[in-house]
Length: 153
Image 1 (cartoon, helix red, strand yellow):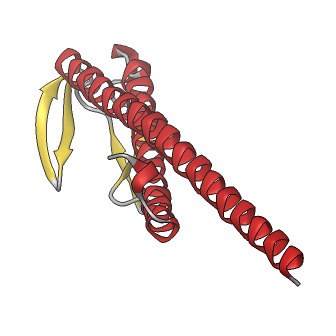
Image 2: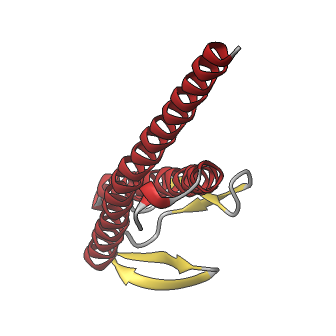
């Protein structure tokens, strides 16, 4: 789209639309980075489990704020959340590989959003510059009109 053909009102609407889209993309990016951080914490927790931990007491999270006491029975077999309340028993190595895949997926999506945000930011800057250019033209025409009025008076 050639933004030089748009009116000042249309440019203002387009600028507002880009600002909304940028805010949404930044929120999505932030959410993805938080998810990546949680997956990395899960990977660290998984790496911390060793054969020596078998039989140890621990607190098992039922919700974010509710924990119940439990014992670590089999460190090679883990219950992994697949999402939306589905769980699957996996071997430790398989769980580790699954977390790696999720980290890569989330990181790739965050990188894609970063690219889109950069492009949208450049577009937004071009729109603002065009608005400033058009406002300068309007002010110039108004000044010229005022000068002509002063000469005629």
